[in-house]
Image (cartoon, rainbow, N blue to C red; front, side, top):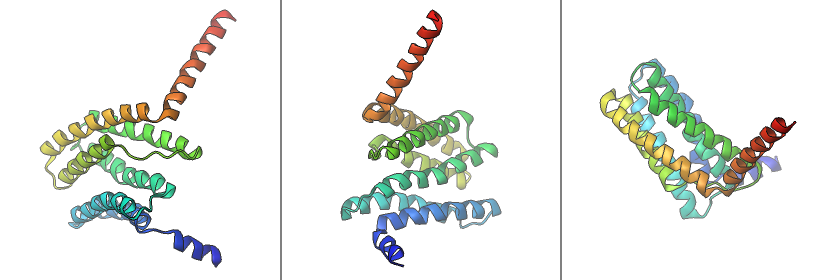
Length: 195
C-alpha cells in the first residue's frame, strides 16, 4: 500500500499527459480502423497533449527521466503505425515513410542505450520541428487531403534527417559508439587479413 501511495505521489501532470497519450494511441487506431468520425478530433487532442506535457514540465520544473523516456515512445506509438497505415492504403509515399521510420528506429535504439547509462537525451529543436510537420501531414491524411499531406511529409522527412545528424553530433555517447564500432570493424578486418 505504501509503495502504491509513493508511486501516486510521483505522478506529475506532464507524466499523466504522457500516460494519456500512451493509452489514447491504441484507442485512436481502433476508432480509425472502424471508420469513426471522431478520429481527427482525438488525433488533434493527442498531438496537442504532446506539445503540452513538455511545456508544463519545464514550467513546473518537474522534468523527469520517466518523462524523457516515455514521451518520445508515446510519439512513436502514434506516428509510426499511422505512417505505415497510410502507406499501406496507398496515400503516403514510400521514401519519406521509410526514411522517417528508419530515423525513428535509430533514435529509439540510442535513447535506450542512453537510458541504460542514465544519460539524459532531451529533444532538440529540429526533432520538434519534424514532429510538427509529421503531425500536420498525418492530420491531412486523416482528412483525406493526400496531395498536400505528402508535400508536408517530405518536409518532415528533411527535418527528420537533419535532426538525426544533429543528435549524432550532439550526443557524445553516440559518437563514441560509432567510433568504437568502426574501430572494432577495422581491427577485425586487419586481424583477419593478417591471420
